[in-house]
Amino acid sequence: MDGFKSNPVKEFRDFGRMIQTWKVEIKNSFIMSKGRRISNGPIESTNSKIKTIIKVSNGIRDFRRLRGKIMYSINKDTPLKNENIKKYIDITK
Image (cartoon, rainbow, N blue to C red; front, side, top):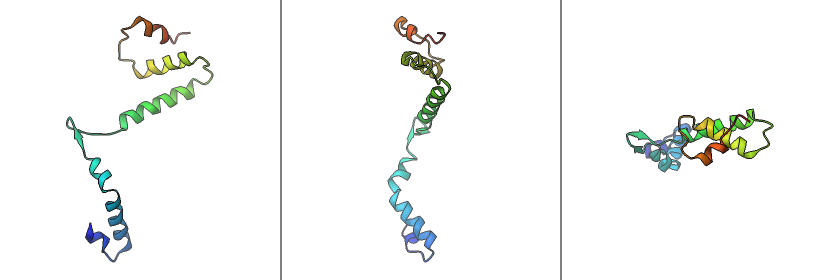
């Protein structure tokens, strides 16, 4: 890093400063858990799906119905176990 920061070329000095500034964050991006790098990609995907559902569901006034539609769309593969939950996820109305 010192070689970059003391280099006569401005772009290399800028690169050296950037590496020094973001050193901790860069190191954290390589942390492994269960053989995989930790990423916020899956939650960003879920947030994107929710935003798309809200855009497409323009006009739904009942929050419970919108919530049910979101929960069903995100958790299609998860079986419903509780009968009380099933009545809130009825999106056929």
